[in-house]
Image (cartoon, rainbow, N blue to C red):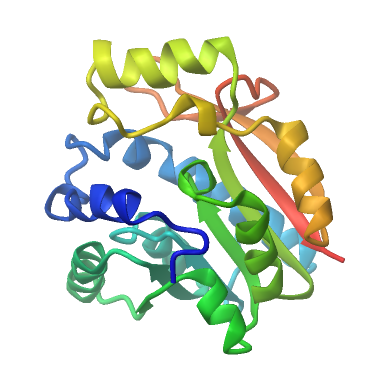
Length: 240
């Protein structure tokens, strides 16, 4: 049960469950970037299935490390049949309550991706957003994600690059200066460069098909996809 998730990381995010859906709370950065993440995923997934942009009706999507369901709800509202997976029980309870209040049918499950893969579960797409920088074994994690997607299916990851700029903005700035995130949310040494992610993905049988930077706009403006991957970035990968 602990092959890819550390108990202290689970406890850290479980403790934030009650404030997960507060757009001005500790998850404010995720609220701000969520429309971009979900829209980017939906467009690439729909294109892979020969559909119009963001037409996800009937497609099965697994949201690994779903927390209280920000991305799960965003993708469900775009028509996907979503399963949310997380190891944090309090966060999952917050997810179930919020989905019920919004009239959304999302299958939330407690566990690890390797457990679900061992059951033989398969999905059209697997997403893991702002998760891989918190896992204990990236190679095992990517192998589990690859095992959960149908052959030819898509895996989507978003994470933080390990650069001087990410240390300045995502670690020092966000956690200590602006206090957008609780201190200790991230360990900069665990941030992942695109080259590292690409090589480890290939070892798991996944091939990167698209990558974009995610850049915050000016105050009051939405996040946008850019070519700048120095801090936040999102990746689409296809299973061989």
